[in-house]
Image 1 (cartoon, rainbow, N blue to C red):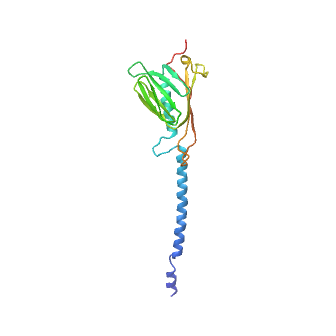
Image 2: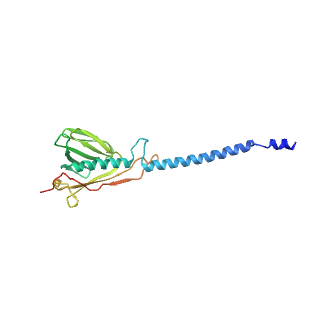
Image 3: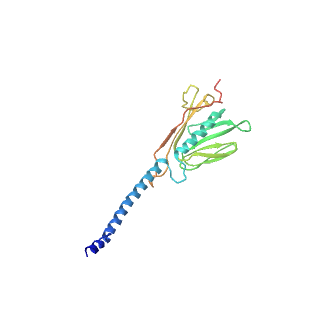
Length: 207
């Protein structure tokens, strides 16, 4: 009789099972909440607004790489401002062509046009416009600011841009960017990039 009584006590009762399931669900909910929080923080840190959106860092590297390459080949400067610069660089077939770096600081797309070319630059974006082929490449699409600075051979900055094109020997670019929106709590920290001063190796100085 005592042996049968002990055998009947082996196992869990229904209340015990319910308590165990409830505790397991609480633990799983806590783990899932922690995972979602970490994933959201990681997303905000690297700057993803969408799964395939380039990171701010990747856009910054691409911008500096393209700009540095063009500056090193530049033989002349056609026009300058704090938000745009037009460089004359060699063609593969000979001669030169004009390439414009244009920053659109507005909240709407703008059309940049000139003799033989026309390009649409998205809002808050920096574009590289090849005037010869009438093509435009958006290098960075999440900018808050973008400023071009110009210097002479001694490193002295130009504070005005009138009649100084022949004397410019160095150029730098500084920009800040931010991705995401505050509405869905995906706004990233402000990402700042300051390029070195690039030399115009092929551009002659003032006589």
